[in-house]
Image 1 (cartoon, helix red, strand yellow):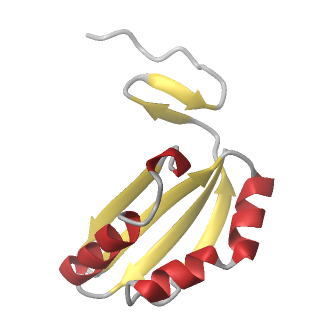
Image 2: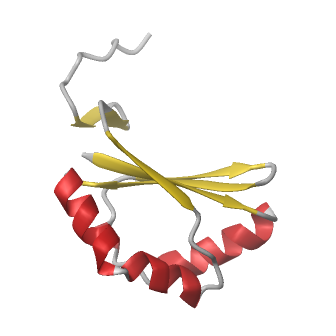
Image 3: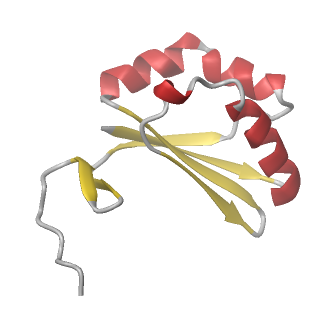
Amino acid sequence: MHASILHFTGDPDDLARRVDELFLRVPADNVRLLLIVRRDDGLTMIDTCPTREAYERFRASGWLEQALAGVGLSVPAVTDHPVHLAVVDGAVISGRDIGLAATA
């Protein structure tokens, strides 16, 4: 799994409305793991692709830039990183199953 981290700076309420509008256009089956975090000065989006190669194809497609412009968002600074471990609802969805602690 490979993650991209996008930082949007501005009014968090306005950015949240625009990001919500953006995701109305994204088919649910295209999203494996996505986090959108509210900050005092904006939003941070952490999006994932199954592999670095898939991430590079996605970025090269130009879809992101067009989709952001379509909802009035400029392209933020983007960094990308390999995912070491991803866990959702206690299940490892990417990385080595390290054996999470049992429920206390």
